[in-house]
Length: 288
Image 1: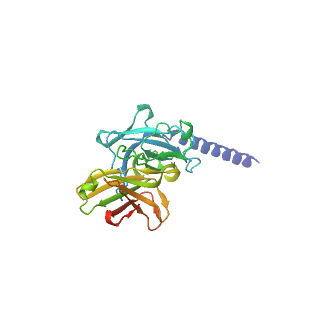
Image 2: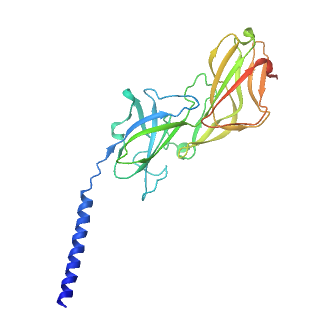
Image 3: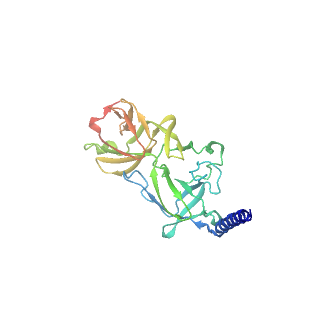
């Protein structure tokens, strides 16, 4: 019996020592929060619109912590929600307010970001739903350069992975029109070119970057980039969407009031992150 008591006592002492050792090791672990160092690039395989960020550009950032080792959901409460980061000199991104600089501790997280920055996201009634953020392109794109929308996600941010190279993707579509006139220079001096039958409003899911067209169709006046006596180049950023065959897509009004219409011969789906080129010759466009 004496031997049995000694054995029980030894086991108890051993378990106690192991317990103390584990507790001591845990307390000695030191996860000093590290500042997130951000590098941002724009994926531009198709040269859709904005090719690179300029000094003074601002993006919005969300940090979504992992829960029990699994990625969290964008929209959950977090310490870093729609934080504005601005590109300064030396290609350095910083929070507009030094107190908003993002630090990462011992928990993993995902980073979501978008451009251009909108301070109203999450703060106004129609912009509370991060899976249906309202965004529209301009109908007069000669006077607006804020028509593009960029989206990015970086997975696996951690205390040991705090320097990030974030790749932004174009969420919308670019249309390029090369318009030739076959020597009709006198007819195009003050001509008017328009894009028809497109929805210009959308909702964007900030969790995925997916764009859904919404609202009525509108007319877009595209940006005129280059021009000579017989040719004009137009371009526009549009919402990704599908059009049926026979849809009137382009029109041009000449100086004498003649209106020429281009109709789609086949159905066409404008896809995100894509650029489409139309080479039009006035002599082959059907007359209205």
